[in-house]
Image (cartoon, rainbow, N blue to C red; front, side, top):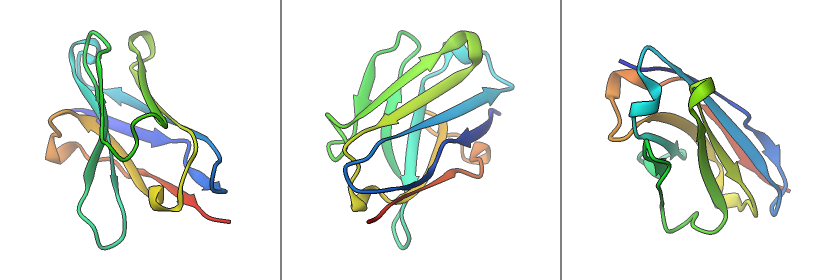
Amino acid sequence: QVQVVESGGGLVQPGGSLRLSCVASRIAFRGYVMGWYRQSPGKQRELVAFITSSSSTVYAGSVKGRFTISRDNAKNTVYLQMNSLKPEDTAVYYCNTYPADPPSWGQGTQVTVSS
């Protein structure tokens, strides 16, 4: 199973930007589809975006045009650039393979969008 470590979260004002990073290990990273997910209090975890081994991308409708997922296979790292952040983007953000491997959830990184 993949082991992941997410970082880059924080407190940001509405309209601001953050860049999340996720370093993955224990897998042949370049061959895996990787995804970013998020979970807000009282809600189920949801898919934000995923990126294929050939760097094709898919986004949830709520973030399309504002978020960009990318990967660096040499660093076993997947990124999530988040622009034009809104209060409703507040959540714990996680990375995992896509489809997600349940035992592989990491600690996540908290993103709070508030003035």
